[in-house]
Length: 252
Ligand code: NDP
Ligand code: 8X3
Image 1 (cartoon, rainbow, N blue to C red):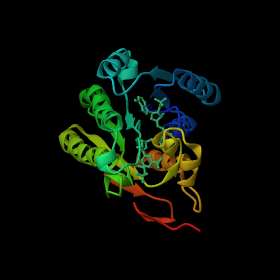
Image 2 (cartoon, protein in one colour):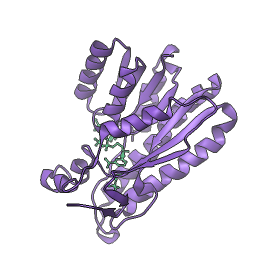
Image 3 (cartoon, helix red, strand yellow):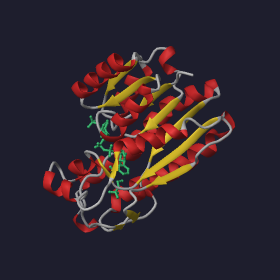
């Protein structure tokens, strides 16, 4: 059956690949991100190639009013969201805590934690009213293990881990599935953003081994939505085969 899937952070990386994956299966989409031109182009491409309906909503997920205004503007039909993928997020910087930039900390906490909560708070009541739905939070290996200089990014993803568990507990009596997908190293715009546009530094993160691709993560996100209603994946960690844990990557 055709689903309605809302994906945050769909302008690049995992979110974009997840949008293509669901679109290829004929599902209708609400896609979000700040970069309006990219979002609008993506919506056009998905509509053209997959004959689905797509609503692009451009807003900054850190801004509570922007989130509330964009999501509350959805018509009744578009409020019947079956799957919410809370994916928008970032790392900013990689510094020891005594040298960390407080603006970076705020960006990470506001996006990865508060943005995810704002979206959940808007969409979950509609799922509760329909007694169905699936919330998928994109966590990270950084939300399972703390690594050197990961301090606040790891903290934000540990928060996603805890919030996912708490959300599942609160929504279990409403027939709503809640899943965390926690990837390891994946080549997207992630490192470019983390290192403030430094292409060389970002590229070095993925040298000497085969990192995950955005499509690998999209495959797993799609998979967890295909299981029978009585089966839920609570938590799924995936890494490149060359990665053993947050800090050990076998490089040639
Ligand atoms: P990308 O940088 O490629 O994509 C991030 C997405 O988040 C973009 O679409 C971006 O859109 C959106 N986003 C960021 N900030 C905001 C904001 N303030 N408001 C709205 N949207 C925002 O990275 P990934 O695809 O790799 O990251 C996706 C998620 O996966 C993140 O939560 C990340 O922490 C997590 N992750 C990434 C891993 C990796 O190694 N790549 C591994 C594990 C987890 P726009 O800029 O247009 O607003
Ligand atoms: C992104 C993966 O290891 O850079 O969450 O934190 S890592």
